Length: 151
Image (tube, rainbow, N blue to C red):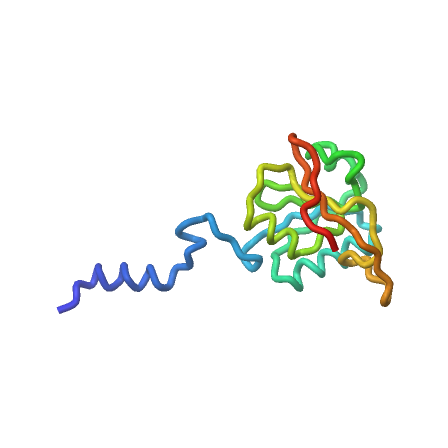
């Protein structure tokens, strides 16, 4: 005879994903990114579409004072762009590719977040036909800035 408690416990272990048990592993499908942007910025909406197409869940807040949000979250002036997002304790500034966000969440470095300063052509939501320019994703925090990825 099978002990029902043992059977149910085993079934739960198989059916409940490790992310809900361990809390240490995340996938883009269960990761919420809260984006703050100006209602007048079209490229911000396109970047949000890029995140959603990459499987992230996005919560969007429109404001006419994005700079106040950047100030509140200590985004360095030299790294600022048009929109700012929060994800699992990190700040994401500008047109950061979704795979860089995913790598950040996998690696969990001691940092404030990632930034793509300005609006480089070819970055997510800044595509212009076949045109592209190289750009860097900067990891920033209290210990300074470093290149996290190059595209």
